[in-house]
Length: 267
Image (cartoon, rainbow, N blue to C red; front, side):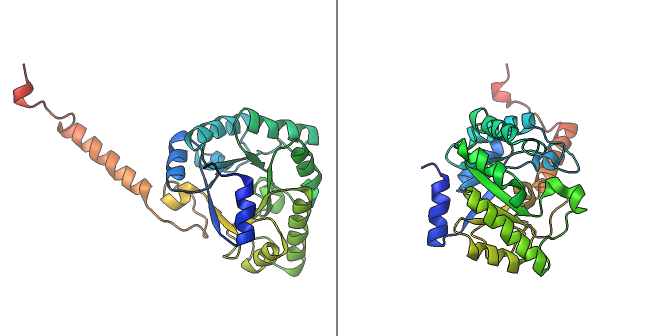
């Protein structure tokens, strides 16, 4: 059974929590799907994790289209949501709708995610009028890293809490099917979750959100440059891979690989 946005609404109504993980390629998407994760985010975090950039800002529509299509091929039963990258939706509503449509039509995504609250509500509504599901994203918005002055926790005072709630409500009114709350205090996230009829998905936002999302490479120990303090490490696959590659190298140098044929098969 394929997961749809309706399932998320049903889970919210039943108070059933759900998980979302990132994937950026066919093979990893297959493993995420086999693990039973219902929602996959093709995040613009691929700029850092896959392409080696210091932020998400260099990611292009071409990057997102290529990676989204690969993930959809690997996990057709999952709800695959693709990030709209920097400057793909901020310039005009028409361009936002066009680029969102490309991610669905060419990339195969079932929905898109974009950053921003009240200021993006009209753009969100325009995309939804084109019958494209939208996931919102408020709190820490990485595409605004220069304006925010870094990746600091947001909504840390009463004014910030009020703005976070106003942003989330504006997105709900515009028609988003869910909203990501990134790097905000648990109290603020709990208030937003209680106030909305749509699911909230926490990313460093405490335990009271309806769902939780993390970067798959962070939980598997595959990305060594930086791990968010709120990301739980469930495995050390990067270290295991390095040890396996070292063993291969040693076997090559010693002549153990490739193995010599058995004498009975020679000649």
